[in-house]
Amino acid sequence: MKNKYSIFSLIKNAFSYHENWEKAWKDPEPKKEYDAVIVGGGGHGLATAYYLAKKHNMKNIAVVEKGWIGGGNTGRNTTIIRSNYLWDASAGLYDHALKIWEGLSQELNYNVMFSQRGVMNLAHNLQDVRDLKRRTHANRLNGIDAVYLNTEEVKKFCPIINTSQDIRYPVLGGTLQRRAGTARHDAVAWGYARGADEMGVDIIQNCEVKGIKRNGDTVEGIETTKGFIKTKKIGVVAAGHSSVIANMAGLKLPLESKPLQALVSEPVKPIIDTVVMSNAVHAYVSQSDKGELVIGAGTDDYVSYSQKGSHDIVEGTLNAILELYPIFSRIRMLRQWGGIVDICPDASPIISKTSIKGLYFNCGWGTGGFKATPGSGDLFAHTIANDEPHKLNAAFNINRFVSGDLVDEHGAAAVAH
Amino acid sequence: MFLINCPFCGEREQSEFKAGGEAHIVRPKQPTELSDDEWAEYLFMRKNIKGVQFERWNHVHGCRKWFNMVRDTSNDQIKAVYKMGEKPPVK
View 1 (cartoon, rainbow over the protein chains, first blue to last red):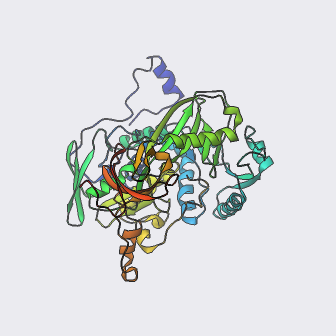
View 2 (cartoon, each protein chain N blue to C red):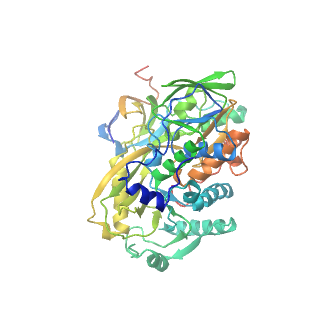
View 3 (cartoon, each protein chain N blue to C red):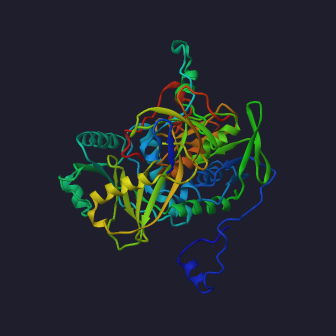
């Protein structure tokens, strides 16, 4: 049993200069065999392991990660959480996640710094206005909080936005989801890792998957850089590298992996207390608790695994940011980075069984996976444990690309994620 | 970000180009006879290779012509460019 994190443990450890905190998770070598192995130690993978152990009583399981946990897209996203998606299937999926977020710090006994500061999506042309109003109504029919704001209300909610109607893409209105917000992305991975480890899950870092062993149409185990691991169930949550793992098993996925960039500024005093996203000009911004402006840019249009994006993408985003927030004109950028995102043709994820027995994929989250972390882990764990999808992820099966029953969120979601 | 040697215009910045995805996916000769699985394969399934990949590109802000490229997607190094209809110059 791990020591509970509390004000008292904080005071107690202060007396020993914080040098005697117990390790949040062990660093074991892999066993010969597990009941299930999760490939990918990001937020989604660790959450999957956590819920497999907690809700489905599968304790003899492992998470294998080629680098360190939370070092991929979990540590590279812009931490935005919202559930204001247009279609019923997406609304169900993302609001399931949002509801778990609301109690996650307490459940994990780990402060994920979930902050419901609201997410505002701006409209810059007449079609945006129509689309956002339609989405607001659709959200409310699905029980998701959403309001439409006119230009004055946008200005009132976030006073630093330039609402002049003379700019290239003037603000004509926007939507607001007040339950939406941000969370500390690293803490999500660490909290789930600590919780899973406590229930007996082996979290194995620096362990890259090199092959998937099959006997006909059934999986037998995985070849890794730390040797062969026997298992009957493999859950792949490898984000940008999903296709690489699929190719090892002789499967093809409807994915393209592309660089997505983000950047942060030098820390400044509190200036923006919400998240503002803008689809038409592709710019979104929020402020971290450290004071940095967190800015998300778009994806490049070519396949790349290089974790670097093109400079012109960043330039385009910053042009838009400066027109919308002239007050940021002299702020300096501190860091810029890229992550590799796996994008589905319909911009919706895949949480699904495959044609190979015992092989499951949770992928295709594209540019918007962070917000779904708890829900994705919960539903993927259900799918692996029962060999059947939960009703909330049934629509996100891989066969939708054969049947044509797509969940097209490309134009329908509030922003390009 | 990288430079691309357009087979028609010469070396230009990548931002002048649009990526057109995986190359050499053959359009079905008899679309009416395709099964749903074959349609899915043609329309949606992609190799999405980490390593050397064959791609189509369009010089949208230049000559607006399509051409093919061989590129290593793990480091964005271009191995070759060649015109539509030509055989790939590397394997």
